[in-house]
Image (cartoon, rainbow, N blue to C red; front, side):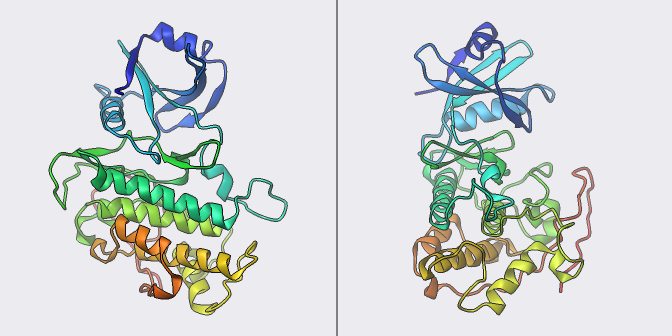
Length: 326
């Protein structure tokens, strides 16, 4: 069913005049709302409008064309003068972001390894649908924990399609006029074409960085906590876990061989996904096969040699240099 159009006065009524704020997205605040049928919704009010509101139209068109258990459903929208809002199904557990960082024995928000593994698979299924399952191929360009929402059963749903691009033809390579994404998750080829062509493998890179964060419980761009050695580069720190701990990963909270294998799989898949050359990254379909297969069948990828995501890069800069890590 296509998203329904609402007036701004209806939006105010749905949100009880923007009474309960759920969070802040990249393009504006998100409020809790209730439709006349009693269904709870999340209403994203777009406050940062760019020109003709391209990001808004983009999100309505791209999400309006999707229907998948791992893609958040767009219920409706408001386009009235300069007032713009998007109405999504309500996700009671919020974003994945709040469940994966600062995990420790005192944390009551920790998801078990099996659940994290299921979430990683669910996100991959959602991406596979966007890349090849719907009529119009959609590249998301902003896959990160903040944009993965969890329903009451912790089923993950990809959200926030403001930066997405739609491609009617089945082209393998695409052109992008400007860099898009969030520092730390942006594939190298989006900074410079010297690294390769922009394609659906750019989403695979972001996905890989995200599942490495899910395993490690730390953000890839927060380096203050790391020793100022080669470990300052997040993937190298993780790669050492695979290299040095052949059998046991030495990760907190792993209580069985089965969990150890799950985590090992997530690490190996994540490291394959963040290979610098897009041609060396798996497709998201191959990612699913690896996550659902036997860990013994997985080959350890080459050590990631790429730019350090810890340094903020201006999206306006046309050229950037990226130091190799040892």
